Image (cartoon, rainbow, N blue to C red):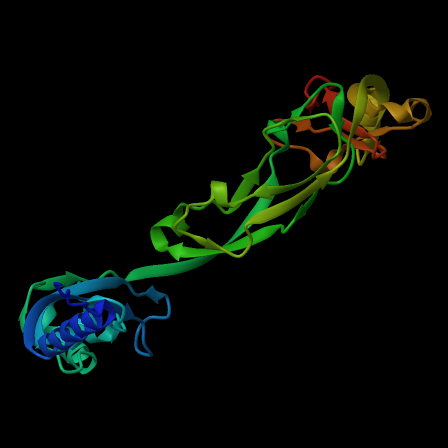
Length: 308
């Protein structure tokens, strides 16, 4: 009867794995060469301008060393970036890579640089500025549906933001940033306005949203004829102008219609405020309640030439 040999496959597999590991370990101990990409960070130091910001680049070179050293640099273990003071390049825009070897070699361990692949690198040192930008609500662009108007004080928080970034982008920022709401307004507003969408992504800002709050209410149009009050006029003009009248058109919050009928308004002409060149005065409305909006006075400018 023929006998068959029985193999222990587990032992066979273990021997195979052991041999492979031995071969890999032996091979990794040999000398090899490979291209390495090394990160370099240019950073401000005590002698740099406080408004300078460094840049990040990479240097390529060919290096030789054991397989283990090269494996560590190319797989899981990366180089810690070489931090190079901006003052060491003395404001140069293009720097030969050979000038930076003194900062690279201490971090290479047992690797040896054979030759440089990157001949030179570009150093970007940006001037960073800071600016205070005020926030305001552009009420003219609000889509208030008639007869609605703003009926309260406008609350906007914060009222200014601080931005900093590259000088060109900072200089392009206005002193006041006007905010608005795109949607139609039919009720009180209590919302957060996104600032990131209207500010350059190159700039850093201390607030990314602004809180806007105000009430709205229906208003109706009214008008009155008001006799002027004269201040500081010579007696000769007092008699001539004593019955001067102005028409005032304005909007009243609907819930105050009845109260507004009893309101007393005063328009003054102050002779001390005369424009001597044109001999004109601007009428001023006083003592108007806070529930009226958008008043106009006709005529807007009063000429004394026609009164003499």
